[in-house]
Length: 279
Image (cartoon, rainbow, N blue to C red; front, side, top):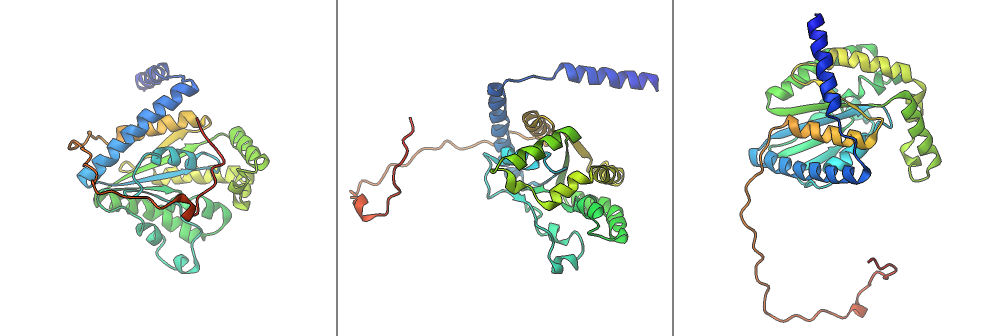
């Protein structure tokens, strides 16, 4: 046991030694490199007909939306979809719990990113009393079975939990309150999540205890430093799915038509006023 603990400590120390502290300029450069690699991964997914599902969970203000934006920045929206479902309707509440999520699962060659997912039942619904104890317990029993079923069907399922500290969450909430451009991100539910920090912590621990399964483990991302979280998650994701660059045929621009064309005068069209010029 001691030898195992020492080996783990040594491994953690080696990983810490490999950490890179980047300037903002270096961050931008590394982010661009990872985003280009994501384009290659997307093409590989299409080439091989893979079906990929990525779940993003975490506390309010943990940065799920920011990471998803950076992940999809260069990707083709025809093949990479972001799903952020609103609260269920009365009709959806009467359905099998997973039913409304199943309709958004990918076809061959697609990747779907869930900005919050079926784990709403283990988090907000449990803490806020939006589900019964029986519904919650049934979710905990069946969620691992549901995810194993997805995996057996050939879906690649990746689950990320973005972890943010109490102090950092408070700082981000205050920043949203004081910034009109971010105030829309605050909802009464967000404020309740802040007030019930311990309840959400205990709910997350229970969720991990039941649903951190071998076939679809939870990957925890330290998210107090947003830029570091972007790079760490994207780098980790790219290493989870082995991929190669898909060969492309050489692209040659065709010659333009030689037939003459006269554009109608701009005065005949509703032109947007040119108020800005950029060097």
